[in-house]
Structure formats: C-alpha cells, structure tokens
Amino acid sequence: MKKLLLGLAASAAIFSMSSTAQAECGTVSMADMNWPSATLMANVDAFIMEKGYGCKIELIAGATTTTFASMNEKGQPEVAGELWVNAVREPLAKAVDEGRLHSVLNGPITELGEGWWIPSYTAEKHPELKTVLDILAHPELFPAKEDPSKGEFIGCPAGWGCQLSNINLFRAFEMEKKGWVLVDPGSQAGLDGSLIKANDRKKPWFGYYWAPTAIIGKYKMKLIPFGVPFAGKENWDGCIVKAEQECNDPKPSAWTNSEVHTVVTESFKKRGGEALDYLSKRIYPGPIMNEMLVYMEAEQAQGGDAAIEFLKKHEGLWTQWVSPEVAAKVKAAL
Image 1 (tube, helix red, strand yellow):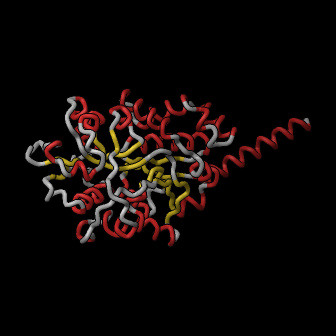
Image 2 (cartoon, rainbow, N blue to C red; image 1 turned 60 degrees about the vertical axis):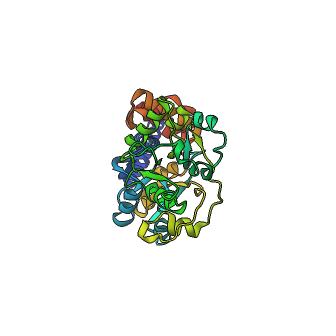
C-alpha cells in the first residue's frame, strides 16, 4: 500500500508539473513564413512544442518585414523561427534594446547566405565572369525577355526584405546606365520559375537567391563574388536596406554576411520555460536542411507533412534538442 501511495504521489507530481508547464506555455502564435525552410521549421517547432511541451500553437502566415512589423507593433506572432535580420537590423536592435523582442538563437541553420547567382553552365562557358563587376560589363550575355538589347537582373518579389537591398545595389552599381533592367518576379513562384526555366533550357540567368535551398542545390547554381569589398555597416544598414527615398547615395558593396535569428516577444520569453529553451537549442545543419527542401520540392510536401518526415528521418538530430522525456512524447505522437 505504501508503494502504491508513493507511486500515486509521484504520478500526481509529474502530472502537476506537466500541467504547470502547459499552463505557462499556453497558446503561442508562431510565424509560418512563406518560404520552404521557414515553414518546415515552424511546423517542426509546432509539433514538438504541442506534443512535447503541451503548448497550443497558432501558425500565422508571414514574411520577413511584415512579420517583424507585427511582432514589434502588436506583439503577434510571438515567435519567428527564421527571421533574416539584415532586412530589419536597425528596428530589431531598437526593439531588443527596449525589451519588446528578444533573439534566443543566432543561426538556426548553418551554411546559409544570400547573394547574386548564375548557372554553373554559364560560369563554365564564360570563365571570364569571375565577379559581379565582370558580369555587369556584359549585359548582352543575359538578354532581357522584354528588350533583348538590355541585360536582365532578377531581383526579389515586392514585400520581401531583400527587395530593397537589390534595388539599392542596382542603383549603387549604376546598372541601368550599364544596360541592365531590374525585374520583379512577383512572387517566390515567379522567382523560382524563372530560374528553373532558364536551367531546363540551358539559358543564361542572373539574379538574387539564397541558400540553403533545394533549387540552389538541385541546379548547382554558382554564387558570384561581387568584386568589391563590403562597404560598411553604415552604408548597408543606413542605406542599402532602406526604401529608395531614404537611401540617397548607395555605395557599391558586397552582400553583407547573412544573419538569421529566432526571435520571440517579451510575453513569450516570460512564460516560455522549457519550450523557450528548446527554441534556443535547435540548429539544422545546412546539408540536412537542403535534403529536406529537395524532399519538399520532389514530393510537393507542405510544412506539416515535411515536419513529420523530418522528425521520423532525423530522430538522431532533433532528440539532441530536447530532454528524453519530451523526446518520448514526441515519438509517441508520430
């Protein structure tokens, strides 16, 4: 009887601790960003936090600048798993200084970066194109669809943080004077479609993209050095990433080092507990993320299905991010 009572007491204590953790975590709004690595990460986080920590997750569609603005001004969503800092560095630093937002992890994915790319077959055909400066001297090698007398540079879709950076670098390098046009692809589908179409037809392509991504790995795209040094934080943060009317004199520059953080609001930081600790630990190696992105593309898998695939296939990785007790709960729910 004594053993039974002790067992019941222990079970009650565990249940009480679990209930307390769940109550502390409560309902959490989380950004489900509109690109594959971010939606995979958001859905993995959602599954682990719901099944392992008892949170109730509300996924909110988002993008870099719009999600940051909403977090900063409204406190919603409470978690952004893959926030690319370069586009919002100054206002993010201010929000952190003033205690509204907090970075809990710098670098949730390894081996990532942004820049300007060309296909590997173009690089092989034109070995003289070693830098962006070399490319800019030859717009005729990348003829625009609307006006083949001009070179075509594919920038970022409207609303993405990188749109402003590409516009201002286009101005800084005086690309219009050199015979180039800047093309807004309209959406990620448009950006991807232009790159895929060019590669499938072995046509030239020059534009912005980032890694890790399935498309960069699948088509073996080549990241091109700019041929000029990084022109400093004042130029980048104070001009390149801002709207054109706030950037009167952009200087030619290499792309700034890409920086990605997991960011949370003050309200979630206060109550996140073990779930917050999990968010500060989970790091995806670049090759594994690339592998998952290739899977998502090949299978047309959405974030939720991809999260299950990841959790089943890479148990050895994600179980390092959580306690054995939490891992057991997550595995039981798969």
